[in-house]
Length: 218
Image (cartoon, rainbow, N blue to C red; front, top):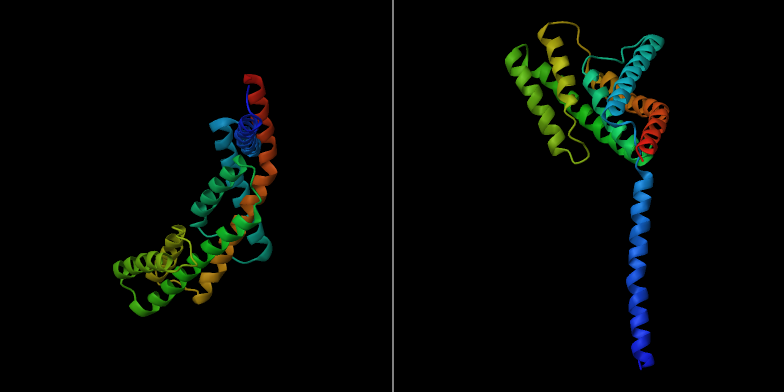
């Protein structure tokens, strides 16, 4: 015959042991529900290509509308980086995460602005030696992003600095320090917003495609 104390302690241990399991099952279930299928590698590749192309088209049309240069060649790399990140967020169901988008935009724009400001300053200081100027621009771009705690390390900033250097080497007309803000930092921010907007629009049919494929295999 079990004593009341023994019986009570065993039942309390049993109940205490089962509760964490239920909680862990619920948490695993919630994580699974938040994950989104977008049609496997083919769907992911197609969504990435579509978002990148439509974002580029949108910025190009905006440039025509405002009659001011917004798109510059290094943004081809920027749009692919942002699109890859947006599609990864789409797989987690977090495309329009305002906090994450703000943090990404601020860090990238600070990194680009600092690197480009230093490059514009160096172009006037070092003169027209192509080898020295190119090397110095890459050096200050990397170092400024690495040492600035408010900045993210955003490699396309190096391409934006290199573009300015090539203009200086070619003795063409050069913008001033405003180059760092427009088109560079402004363009980066606009691209991030445009990419996320197109991803939010296009991801839904891909989610539906992924869900139907999963149902068919089940």
